[in-house]
Length: 275
Image (cartoon, rainbow, N blue to C red; front, side):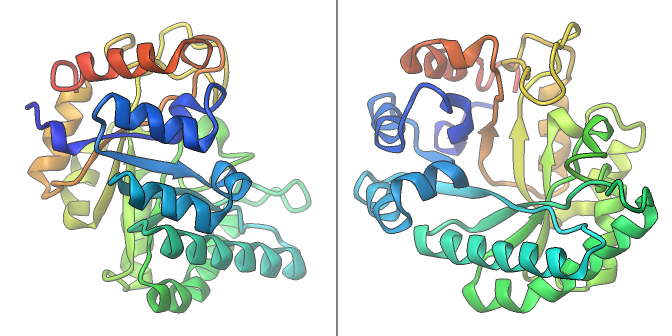
């Protein structure tokens, strides 16, 4: 299962330890071939400067994270949110990322209507497709765990992501990001992955800690939790995915407190063993 050239480490895994230049230096120092960049860090360092840094160091990109949050019932707010996604698509194109991870947005307290929020998200994505196509960056629809449905994403299952892809009918420019932390619990995950097939354009791995302490920022290092990550990897590969295996670990209490080389060393050790 070990294929060193398919290892990607998401920038968020070292979010608090490193500036973008420090992060890239750590990847190079540890022979990590690929990353997915965190938008906030890219804007902080500068889009053009980040693109040059990545290219000059021969680092591949598995994605750009993230754009979205377009479910507002207020038309003006929703339009501004879509404009921001268009800017994110432009940034992704400028740095050479193949896809923009898309996070739909949550349920607005002003209407408390999850079905309406899902329809607004779908309608908004349809309006973004022409721009995504024009810059050549795929929208990677990412289902997230229901525990953050209220604040982050009304797209919560791979089954629903497939249904959205069916309705959007834009296979060339809309795909699905499978985040193991977000979807491992789903009793229909096997059927969802099989149906998604080549729609899967991004695969993120981290582990669910049995005693997790935070809704978003306490992900586990693969092997430290309860997810059958190797099994999920086999399933996405059986469905046709042959891209990067992206370690994406939001870890405020643990891994963000450690030295970058230590974190990367553990990732390299776990890669191919537990995922």
